[in-house]
Image: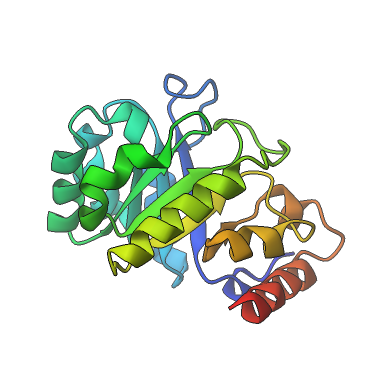
Length: 199
């Protein structure tokens, strides 16, 4: 049993079977989780045409709503839509997408989710070239004096958390590392300890 309160946020992956091969869950699950959980719901839309569902997911309880740059034809407009709905606006980028593609809208973003695996499947190995992307993004955020979280998702665990944080990330998403460990709660504690030392 995992004590979810040990985590800082609860990360929810929404998959549509189109943007990514798998299908996960949708609005009803987000709404149900929101009814029993006080943690911020960090909701990651791995779906095509996310702008059609922004308002519905915010109404369901999403506190942070992240859309993929690759799926958002009018990204600036979608970011404004998220903020107008009262949620923090996040943008995710796949491993092949350069962070520089976000620089023209960086002032409009609250969080950048750097995917360190190809989205859609759990249990993948961390792509270490991601560290350079994180560093470049953190440098740009610092130069502009912005308050933008850098979140990393995919293959994150105790073995690489420190390197990811040192590269400039400040939010880690860990799935398999938590759920596959003998003591999930202890693993969360250890990862948070690494974060405390890194900052």
